[in-house]
Image (cartoon, rainbow, N blue to C red; front, side):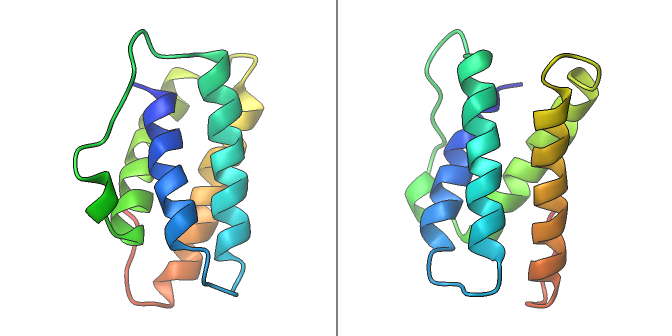
Length: 107
């Protein structure tokens, strides 16, 4: 499971959420920051990319990131990076609540 992949997805989400004024941008950017720190601490063995990233919607980026983070939480729940992983997971949960008002839910 690659933290770098989460960072890429949240990077795209940060571009797509820039026009919102409801707190979503703050949580996306904070989640991306946590993902960047974790990705730097645990780099993937090879570069990562997401096919079709440029055409993904905000919902798709966040949903895919949420699925990956749930898997990462199980793998890293007791390591030195557990606080950052927990913050990343919490931020995505908050975003799920914010976007529920828009009529969609994160996976």
